[in-house]
Image (cartoon, rainbow, N blue to C red; front, top):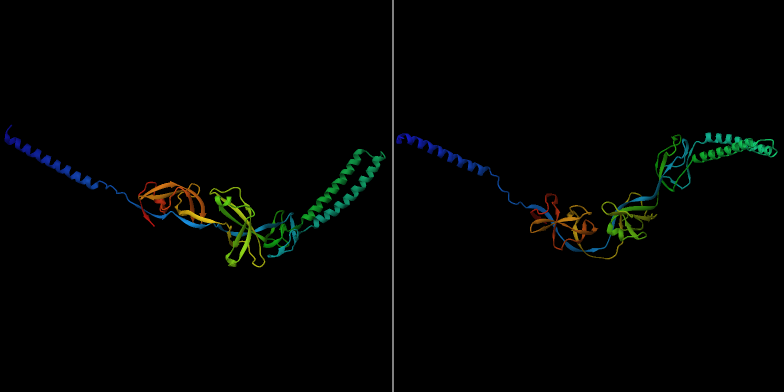
Length: 353
């Protein structure tokens, strides 16, 4: 082939090769530019607290509201029209005292009729009994007379009860705190007329932890205080400790105290209860906010070399907003108290105190 003919071909091939090389080089640069940067390990900021032992006075304090020792509704037993209501809002009523009356006129009329029927039935019974003894009447006649007498007696007893039920009495002694009916109104059986509370004794219900529940017993004395009477204390007695705790291992406890005429208390008042536990000592404590899964399955994140490590712990009593740690943590360990939602076991963290 002629050298002059080959030269243009070589030039074309060289140009194509140069263009291909250039395009390849540009693609590498574009790929490098578009390649995602490798993220460096970012430290997640968290708040921490140091586990430490503190001297704690073994004092159990709880807050609750006073409730009446007894309260009840005054209710109608029978239906009818109220002819009288013998109490006002705020009145004091006695247990068994008459507080209202339902109209009994119809039952009284029925009672008189029943008494007349009973008198006739008694005479018939006596007559047929004598006739039967003289063989002038049959056993059937006598039994029928006996039935009529017994039925009349039953009707009288029933009407006496209906009339008695129309007299409404208070089920407990106490103060009327709500009045729902007035004279002239119609009521049905079971209709409430008023609500009565007895605050001669008061109760306060509180919840205590499992450990505290086992350290208390019925009859223990407690001290009750309220901001209403600053500096004054009331004496109470534990009257009930539940045998069953709730899902968080807390147990209901009821305290009973006598109302004091010199320092009268009202239902609904907020009070503090001091269970007067003696002793104390050093306890290893952490903030309650350090717990990641609540009291039932307690876990916390500890920080080791800027790494969050999830640990199981065994906890004891609640001391205010702190939790006693029985095992699982060493004194001086940093535990995460805020920011747990952003981390997991093994996360890199930055501690902030």
